[in-house]
Amino acid sequence: MNRNRLFIASCVALVTTSMVFSIRGDVLDALGNDFQLDKQQIGLLISPAFLGFTLSILIGGSLVDFFGMRRLMTVSGLFYVVAILAIVLAPFPDGPVESLFGNPITMLLWFAMLTLGLAQGLVEGVINPLCSTLFPEDKTHRMNVLHAWWPGGLIIGGLIAYFITVIMGLAGPDVDASTATLGWRIKFLTIPLVAVGYLFLIRGQEFPPTERVSAGVSNRDMLMDLLRPSFICLWICMWLTSATELGPDQWVPSLITNLTGMQGILILVYTAGIMFVLRFFGGPLAHKLSPFGLMTISAVLAAAGLYYLGSVSTAVGAFAAATLFGVGKTYFWPTMLGVTSELFPKGGPVALALMGGTGNLAIAFVLPIMGGWYETDGATAAFQYVSVLPMVLVVFFGLFFLHFHRKGGYKPEQLAAE
Image 1 (cartoon, one colour):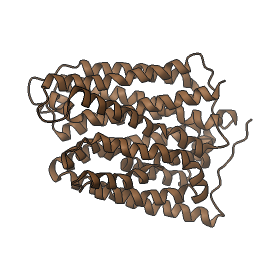
Image 2 (cartoon, rainbow, N blue to C red):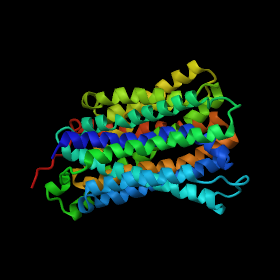
Image 3 (cartoon, rainbow, N blue to C red):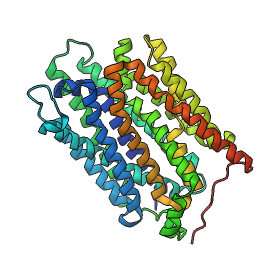
């Protein structure tokens, strides 16, 4: 077993997953124009991607011990190819779409977005338990390093989208319709190229049994670990952290472009750059502050950043607000997964799948809601409404921090191999 190659393959797979987010966020307006959809319909169109993400994380995480990690990662790569081809080859409707589910073209797009989400979820369902199995002695740090490549993929996808925009002259109101269409299709087609890269890396590789299997933990013990009150509280927090982090990300390019006139994708790339650098320091910071101390501070910064991001009018203001938001959301996802793996190791891949699936289900709910707020109340209201979520997290994470402080400090639970 080559654990470094498997870890690199996991990073490339996560890059593929996050490239979908940045490129899809960049092309939302062009996609809406070609398929004649309003903002709320666009939100409904991309929400099944998160539903598919959720379902495949839950199903894939449950099947990791039975179906095999390599097979599930291979299926995810094939799904990326099929979904992207369906989106770029879909015909355009003849007129405005009254109902997303009453038009065969938009239904095709809906299922393509669902398949895209299934591909993303299978990746997440495999790489999290794989990472905790490969590095059982350093889970939170390695999970942060792995998930540094989530913003890394956002940067790669965002820069690809930006340079295609510049090279093809896609910015501005006078762009030829056929050129705009070709532009967003080319951007989307870069995604399966990266998927082929991680398929090559896992080819012929032996994957290890998960930590739960190695320790001989029964299904009953696994279930009991997932019914502990502390796990349920952490599960509730995952709804809020992911809605805070990833829901606004899909609307940031459109928001910043409309409020300031600059290319909004640059803000997404900027916040992703902050996350990419800071996540390499997640392990030492979590050790010094404790994971819940770190996430309490993160929630305060995320709330402030979201609140001010919705009311910016200049590029300088946008970057200032984005800095607060970027730093605040950096440690949410990987630290939540690291804490889950450390405090509930008997839960194995299923515990991580529940967390990841819940996170994406929350995004599926918040996207159309934000789209509706954006359409009716404006961009400022949409982002400031969402800023309430991290304020609630300050209370939850603060209570977790005090709980472990009274017990003498945060300590991971160790499983011995059978």
